[in-house]
Amino acid sequence: MSTHASSGDHEEVVLRPDRPANGGEAVGRLDGRVVFVRGAVPGELVRARIVDDRQQRFARADAVEIIEPSRHRVDSPCDAARHGAGCCDLGFIDPAHTRELKAEILRDALTRIGGFGEDELDDLGVEPGVVAGLGDDGTHWRVRTRLGIDADGRAGMHAAHGPGIVAGHRCVAPEAGMLDGLDDLALTPGGDLVVMSDMDGRRHVTELAPPKPVRAGSRRAARGRAQAARRRREQPRAERVLEGDATAAHRVGERTWRIPVAGFWQAHRAAPTGYARAVVEMIAASSGSPAGGVAWDLYGGAGVFAAALLDAATDPGGGGGRPGVVHVVESDTSALDAAADTFAADPVELHRGEVAAVAARLPSPDVVVLDPPRTGAGATVIDVVADADPGVIVHVGCDIGRFARDLSMFVDRGYRVREIRAFDAFPLTHHVEAIACLVPARRGM
Image 1 (cartoon, rainbow, N blue to C red):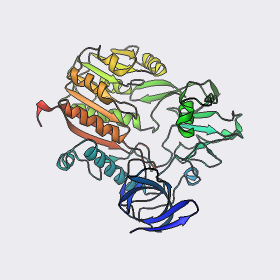
Image 2: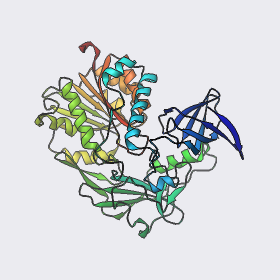
Image 3: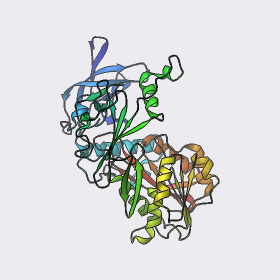
Image 4: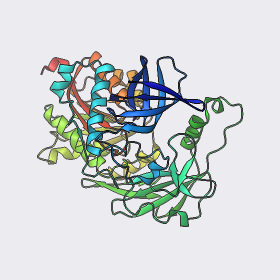
């Protein structure tokens, strides 16, 4: 069903999207053309305003009226998202149903991008219940959040679309108390604020200086204001500690890491433990790792997975024998500094540099764990890992499309997927984390 109307410069249409897209939209069709609709639940009838129709094959639209609401639609608990922030973009959908939609997206990506067959995915358990929660109800799960500072010196979430800051409206994801009293601090307009809750619930606040302006007429300025602003925020910037310390302590198992507040740590408090447990269980179920063997922890950050590999031997449900050495490869100096302190007495070797180049020089591994960024591992890294011929590979993916692509490349290089798990590690958002265990295809079933 579809109808057309005009609203100023933007066309309005009525349609019924029928499936979710990897990005939070719902997918419908209008006169044979695909339309990605923000703010719609698959199955409901909506009036949507076309906001981008520059592509011939598809258009993008925003839902402006819900004509026949889904039974899964709820009032979003996130005040910031209701006022245009980009934080809890699926807060208007019941969390249990959101996990079902994420499972559908995972299955679609593995089929369409990864080339996996329906029967194969059935055998792997990639079905509506595959996406597991991490013990929260969708709110107050985040231990690290990054805010923008507006022209009036107020901290707030970044707007969903465009460079604005949504101040005066709180996101529901950070742990209780994390955002209290931030406007009482003397903040620098144009800067960013990183707020982290440590393992004891103590708050640490670091301000990042405003990014340097992009030179007019430069190549980066020409890529679009939103992209340019994002790239500027990613550049190294001066830091100022406003509360607490410059580093925050986090514990996983019996080990503690001190992580720079402005550095990387998993956003969900339960994610590091949950992912580490999944990794060692997958390895154990794949015949384990040999005692005294070699393990690689690629894109290893501060070494949470390295610790899990070392400690699994003392866990009754662990992943087999204790490795003789774990090689952690990471490009972030601050993460490696934290790892060096944590692993001072352990058989862990730390390597800073680009993953493919460093891994190509390492001793052949028995086990490889890799947790690449959203861009995925890619062909060069996958070639290095496959050529090293490990007995078990565990691949962690935070972008489902790239995750499916990477798994396909591993299959092309002689591996088969033995198990897939997925986690709702970013509740009320479209993001989903997946972990796959691969073994050599020659090993059989």
